[in-house]
Structures are given as structure tokens and as C-alpha cells.
Image 1: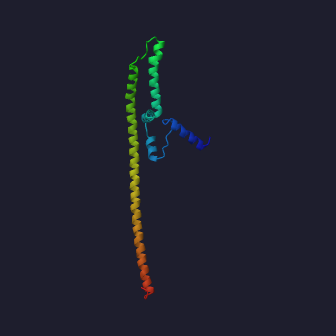
Image 2: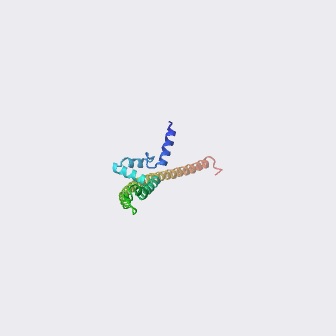
Length: 169
């Protein structure tokens, strides 16, 4: 398979499964921050990436619907009205609460990581901006020096013309 075909396949996979595969880290500051992550930070980022995606929402809604149908209809018939988790679905509520209790700190860790990346990128942009301001100040000073020299050359040229051709001046 060609290089472009492989990249296209990777791009399509990321569109279907945004939490899978390596992310395209073009900026060196972000790449550096990403490379310095601990295992826990990598796990938090991956879980937050998956937990904040549409496939997760649809999969989760499907699992909840399956749980409700399984307990309310299927197991009621098979086990003669002795469901594992009858109608108010207390076990389902417990699992949802536990999931929310675990998912919230993981997402917060990932948000902290995003803030760290943003801070590193902002610091880099500030440094680049300072360099550009210094370059602009140097360019302006050189341009002013060039303008002054050009004016001095013009004045000398006018004086030379007056000296060479005294009647024209």
C-alpha cells in the first residue's frame, strides 16, 4: 500500500474512532508536552478522548436500553418474574453513578493536561512574538539608517551637481 493510501486509511479510521491511533502532533511544543506524559496521564487522555465521543454516547445508550429490555422483558419471562434488576433498575443506577464518579476525575485530569498543553503553546507563542517584535525593531532601525544614508547620499549628489555645474543650481 502506498504512503498516501496508508495516510488516507488512518484518517478514515480516526474519523470513525477518534480515540484510536496516534494524533497528528505537528507543533514541536505540543509534541514535547505529549512525549513527557506519564502512563496515568496517557490513560486519562485516552479515556477522556473516548468518553467524550459520539460513538461512546451511542454505545452507552444502547447498553442502557439493552439492560432495561433484558431485565424488564427477557429475564422476567425466562426466570419467571424474578429479574436480576427489576423496574426501578437500582443496580443500573448504581453502575451509572459509579461510572460518573470515576469518569469525572479522569476527564478533569485530561482537562488539566489540555490546560498544560495550552499553557506551553501560549508560552511558545509569547516567545515567538517577542522574537518577532525584536526582529521588527531591528528591521525598523536598519530601514531608518538606510533612509538616513540615502538622504545623505542625495544631499551629497546635489552638492556635487552644484559644484560640477555651477550655473544650473
